[in-house]
Image 1 (cartoon, rainbow over the protein chains, first blue to last red):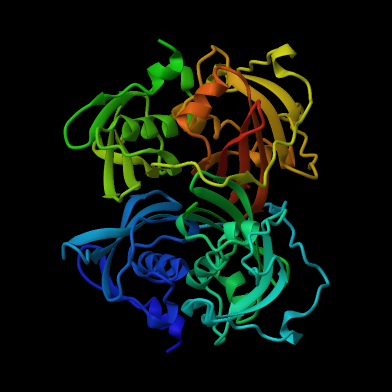
Image 2 (image 1 turned 120 degrees about the horizontal axis):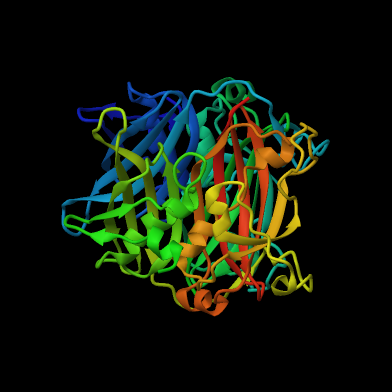
Length: 274
Length: 274
């Protein structure tokens, strides 16, 4: 089993509940990589027998740490319309201090049955005719454990190599990325890769201040078939910081496939110290 | 009482619940203006005796229509940390068909106690030294009822005057905006103004297809004091569409005060037909 599928595996229980287990492969500095948590919460809704349509919008709130071990997810469809459905999803863990169940993560999800309409993009892929990532050397880093699950071909705004506090004039990062062990793209993999960017404050300041995502939103622009066509190949990921202000900074990002189609827009706000 | 304060007024009940009533002044074509719904849900959390800190991130999901009349809001702090707090908020209405209570709107909110840190912006206000909006003629339109609650000074990308299907090459709109009856800016007013943009698909296509916001996210970059300094004056609002694809289109926007400080980043995804 692919490490990603292992990490998002769930056992269905009663009352809209699912149980899962944190994955060593997707460990971050504290708790799991946020992207894998988003993926497993999405997976719960997608596995739910009442699920209508495909993911269209998801917001995930990282409310507290997810300790190593088992967790429980509750995924409830709170409103079902003709072609759209609204979900509330919660991840419950045992609080290491009290031993009592506590909410670690919440999410809202909109799924929808979508039909072909007039379509267009106002955010074309920024790289056209650039280097073919498949011909470039794969860069797998072990800066934090989960990162070795991804192969990156850097384009712009790499992780600073010197943490010397020399401020950059921008906070833009772009790279080609795929799983280091190939696996086809699907909705869960797409939502995970939306959190693959290192903290924008690190780029902007060249200072490795404590930072962590608090809330992430993903808008899905591709259907299952388009994702399947993207196969195991690279996607182009780009993000830029927006406002860095009093402990919180937000970023906006985009994920395109190699054919230049926008698969997802993604926004997040992260806590930072100092 | 200002129409805005009337529209967001709530009566506190037991069990984290509040009751309110839709406002004629903020009526949209179907149900209330989304921004006023966001404001009243935020107001519930801010009035809650357990509220910690100030709004930092909010996502609101418009799950179904809000009928004219009373509604109930449940605002629960689901996780409280040292300096951050996570909220789940639901708006319940009586289903006109069944007469049973049904969820019309859900929201998640992160509040936080924020401290002064290193701060910077990567999205400076696009207008510097432009016309002083206070000297410009006020444009109040009654295209849809709630819109007459706002005074706009258009800058770019106005509502098409001819719905002739002549596609625009972009979907950017910017304007100065304040309440038509002056009222000081606060968090509720800020979240409402984040939904003030007309549907991007109308701009892009010059076709008035059915469209409505499904999910909106707001990241707050200003504290109460900064908002108070903005007073009753104009804020600069700018938004652009991103991907228009198979019934759904997303947009990204920003709200700056007249001093050029970014008050909020806002993103949303809207349904559209055809």
